[in-house]
Length: 227
Image 1 (cartoon, rainbow, N blue to C red):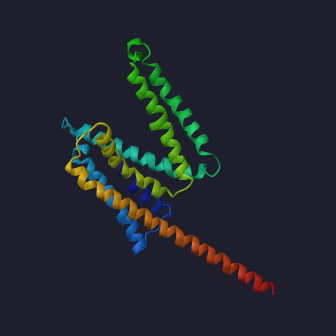
Image 2: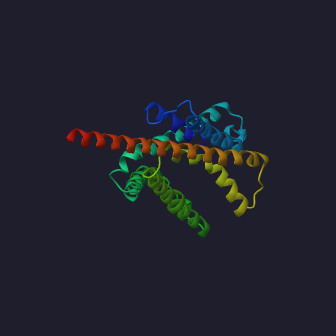
């Protein structure tokens, strides 16, 4: 998940939607992304990328799946931008989960031959409802809502905030200990997010001003030619 901003930056550079100039704005944007991603990796620690059973093949397979997941989410965010121009976020979220339900239905049916697997305690049902409504449906709806209002690189950048929010909630709710890695990585994540978002804001503001100036120039030329 922490590599999603890198994947999005590469994708937008390949499609020429993002430009990295050798100026303060371009360097700030790239530097902010690298700082946020680097800070998130520090918070996770190298143990998060290695297999506990020291099986090299399983380790490579697991890391490959994580990379594939990051690329898939990057494409999910990128391709949504065309849809949000035509459909509402709630409509897109509905169809996402409709197709998701179809794909997951068949593996679920295969486990129904054992009724014991479907006996849940109340706390399990609470976890299921929370996972379905809040951490899944609401989360994807908010991502879709954000795609309509912000650039893909900014949305992808906030995936680096996940380790920080996890540590914060774990400390407040579960009373877990904040590790040295967490304390070191958190400021880099926050500073990187602020730096990259500010650079992107300045870039979009400058682009809007340039378009407005160009429009005014064309209008003046049209008026002068009419005279």
